[in-house]
Amino acid sequence: MTQPRISRTEWRWVAVFAGLVMLVTCIPYWLAWGQNSRPFSGFFFGIEDGHSYLGKMRLGARGELDFTLFYTPEAHEAEPLVFLPYILPGWIVGRFFDSSDPALTPTLIGVFHLMRILFGALMIAVIYAFAARFLDHVNQRRLALVVAVFGGGLPLLQLALLRDTTPLEMYTPEAFSWLILLGIPHLALARSALLGGLLFLIDAQNQERWIGRALLAALCWIVTGLAVPFYLAILYCIVGAWGLASLVRTRRFPSVLFVRAFVACGLTLPLFFYYAVAFTQNQAFAIWSAQNNLPSPSLLEYLFAYGLLGVLAFVAFFRLRREMEPRFMLLVGWLAAVPFLVYLPINVQRRMSEAVLIPLAILAALTLERLRRGLRITAFIVLCSSSGLLLAFAFLFADDPQGAPPVSPLSVELDAFNWLSANAEPGAVIMTAVDTGNALPAYVDLRVFMGHGPETLFWPEKTSLLEAFYRSTLSDEEILELARHPCAAEFECVGPLRYVFYGPAEQRLAGRATPPRWMERLDATLIYSAVDILDGRVQIYEISAPPG
Image (tube, rainbow, N blue to C red; front, side, top):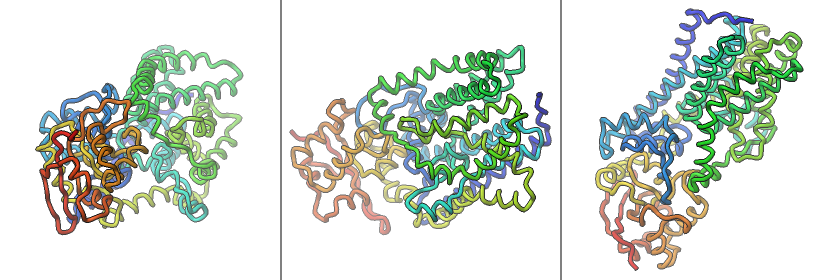
């Protein structure tokens, strides 16, 4: 059946809806920036990843288009085509700002949020277009879009019954949409391109001149891979599940789908194999990938997340199962595959739920439209409670940044970062506490000893070393060896330890008033010192050459 076109009136509604949604997501950020009590780094959640995104933009700003792990001192080969959605915008900004300019990072934060708004609006528009391929009526499409944007699980009920758990929608952006819209632009771009490619492949099914649509699908999916390489594997699983569902439904091999999908997916395989080689043959990238552990929660937690939506979707499927058109086999196959995909024996299990909310929302909209008005409103309130809860947290943190998690460096630390950016040797290794090391690459072109779980190689071993260093429990020889070779034994280092940061976080680690042993043993030179009445003292030491 040929789908009705999306009218201009519909697109105007979608544009207004997308604009309002993205405006709402901006309000807590504006409020936080308006607070004068503490600088705001631009992130309410995923702070560690947020700083890493800014660090990747700084790579581009200083003219580097190939990605290297700046959260670790191990020397390794840079890889192109990794994190381009951040490196390329950073490169553009870098044509107007020097890397030592204190205005660079605030500008990058602004560009980050511009990307968030634009890619978020694009994602909303593509979701609507995708829903329109399956839903004939405007009201159904709008219902599906609202559920796909705001929908979630039953977080309050889960928190009441399973007190030691965290609702999936609070920490897994792939599972829903609201976290993506609030703060993860590259995932919004990846989802838009993933769904856009599926749209083109759907259109190619009923066209004799289908090759152009297949090429457009491949182009979309190449963008998906450039944004999030792992999503290519998810894409192949979705298309495979679509084909399997079609085979079961018709009891015939879906040759038309196979040929068109083979062309579209085949054109993405070189990029997929490139990433597969990069993340297995590049030793540093292989370790980074192995440390990126994202296991799925229990089945019960998934039921709290998707139970209500799943019931609504199943009712629609059960009602339409005998007359369901072939196009719906994509949704059915996708939904049938995800429960198995999220428990595959891989280290990124919960990422396999990427965009599963979309087919759930489309089928759920068919059921919601048939409900009585009061029941429909109740269902909407329950489904949207997760996004409302997340937004409430954002407003709470915006109103009281001091009561929020550490959303930015302290003022005294930020001043120290700006000084380092202007005076430190770019690319040198600096020792900091973990929180300081996480934020520092967003402001300074230095390599930290550690600062980001997956992107700091050998994280567990370095954690104990860092704590022992600041607590002065290392022997003199161990201090000297760490300064000479601040990385794993099997790697060469980008250089010896050059700077030591000693601010509030590091002083809490030291836990003593007397000078730490490393100051004397390394003959460290104090090159920067500043005191803030509220924040405390920051000192930076330089190690010209480790003794011995």
